[in-house]
Length: 256
Image (cartoon, rainbow, N blue to C red; front, side, top):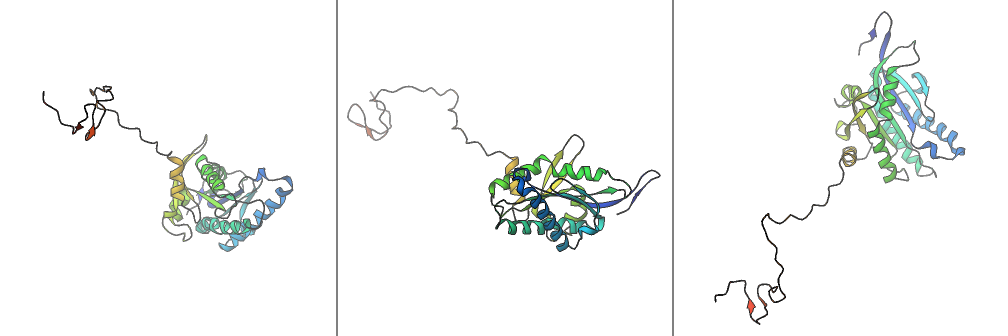
């Protein structure tokens, strides 16, 4: 991928990632710092397993309970795979802790200038992370799996990441068939994105949240022109049952 250059702005395409803790504000005060430190440790392990190093990342930023990091664009595939390893680490960790931890992860490709501190690429990254559709998926699985043993991390990726490395089948741990498209629309960003839930039915989850349950069908209306008549007790006997005259009504008309 080529560099973007001009007389006023020189940048190179970077693969960027943001990770934060789901629902950290609901934890008690004594857990806030330990949770942040633990998430940083688990993210560093996930990066290392994918062949990346936190220490070699560029443009590091803290996001309260998370972090944003940038890597060379050729590392985009490895960066996507981080969610697989982080999900495994978090689910394993949650089996032995009273407060489960889960992570939201977003990955994007975009230009970044090394001599600048504020980047449009990071702004887009946060818009993906905070998109409404992605948030609904995360909330759904937090309720469906309160212990955090099935759901540890969720990924939302930009269209640039999808087209560059995921859709062409270059990321073995995140196959395109296990991803689902969403649309992101905010005041300053509109675009398509894709979600991945390691080990879970991503498409089924997204579809179930987009389409409300089918309503119970109402009984069909009577044909137009049909006139309903109240019958006397003697006339109400059905075919083959005794009528008021003591004879079985076979449903046939009787002559005079």
